Length: 157
View 1 (cartoon, rainbow, N blue to C red):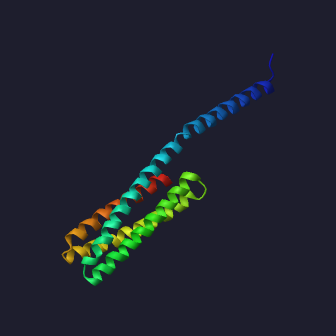
View 2: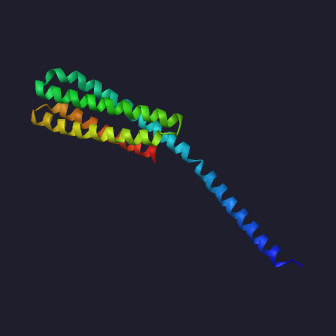
View 3: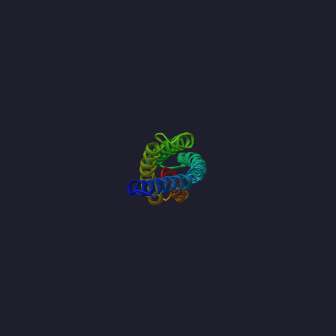
């Protein structure tokens, strides 16, 4: 015959075992997340490389622009370059270790957002000045910056 204490103890042990199995199952399910993060990081690094190509093309076009617009384009390119470099550094950090990676990726997102706004503004200036080719290149650059920002957001999630 079992006493009330043994019966209660059996239920507690069963609940503890069930809770432990549930916790283990949740941890095993979470193991797929690093693969997703690695994919997001790889996508973002590819996007950063594409941006660098556009930046080099824009630098070649600056000499043909009026001085004020050339300065604005140069500043926008510098802002985009700095933001892209910050994003790449954050992505490297995220691929090596999770410690501080989320904060670095969030900081990179802020820098990319600011660079995107500056590029958007200069795109309008270039279009108004009749520099259609530069305006188109800047528009493409802005789209790529926004895509990189999205990829860094995915990597940080």
